[in-house]
Length: 509
Ligand code: C2O
Image (cartoon, rainbow, N blue to C red; front, side, top):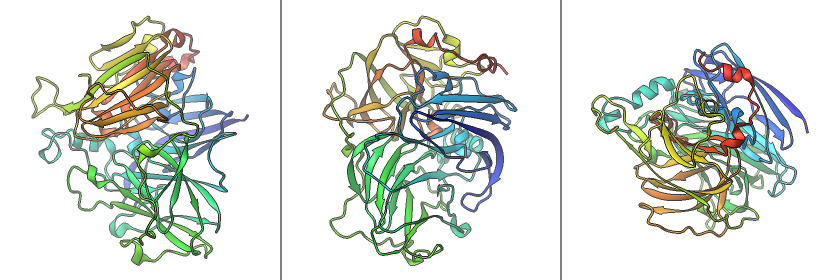
């Protein structure tokens, strides 16, 4: 095992990922930020220095942080934000978490402006087929505006285009930080590979709003991992990746030597109004067996060649089965909730914000405190309660198998993420939950799942990891509108956390 040290300097900078100059928030001057690559038994030590005018926190998406909930990096939940001009050290191990994930700012909507990067954890005996090369592919939507301005636009009284809840529509996207926008279209992210070789592409969506579908012209892909869970290989022509999800696919460079377009297509069905300039498909290049600068035929850009008949179709995430998958344990603790988006009851619709609610509670970060710090050592009764009006917390005092039953009463799809855990995706369907018992053969185990519009869904997890863990929609506009609640798991164990004093002292500054 090795200890790996990183210095992250977070600051404002101008950038032009798709050729259009914009204000960004970046780590070490890069977008995306540095990739962290480690082995499962390693320790990671990251010194984050905040040179921005606002407080920040850096979250390690999907990692368990068992015993180190205070390094989960979630502003107002597991820590107080790192004040401007100050530094904080995150110091953690992977607790057997292996696979493909990412890190990002978890304060306000800062990661929309660029504070993201890949995190790759190699396992000793990861159950994925052999491969020769390992590549990270980050596919994301992109906005030309600065996220605080976009957020104000989202909260336009009466709604964007007069429709409450309409989300800002992206201007395009990026593949590993490179996009194309109309005539600003200048360059393409490109990989030069070896022929007859198998590559693992770790496809990550560190975006703000919409899923992107990834494909490579002339090639099929084999899905072998989702959110850190090795899966029985599924052959596909393309993979749709929702915000915060990850898939590894194997690609064999077995076609005619040449250069091929890779594509990341924004899911425009999520768009709430017409944004005429939007670049809805981002392109990159894979080449092998040809010269270093060979480019694919531009005539194919808008006319992708069809795969031979009989080729597989798009990934259906319902087809994913974990390697060695088995039934999930029976629940011992059940929590039911609804989620909706609406005007707060009794408020004037022409002036108030259209917000998101989980069981009637709309989350807002409390200033100068965190849920973890303000409740350390407090005995809290098992079950759900609401404090300060905006904090819905479900406390689990004993080791339990938690079942979440969720009714999405909203007309939007929501990619929900649970911190500190993977959950089993038990079942789901159209309409409200009517008491269905889930099918439980070999459910997929992951940390981010899309709960479709007007659908119910059941998730389960073993609540064995102490701390305050957020469960939230990863669409940044929805999180800012309050679509988040918290689990407080095994508080008698959190009371024994060894939290550095200076982290507690950051509160209130
Ligand atoms: Cu990717 Cu609350 O996190």
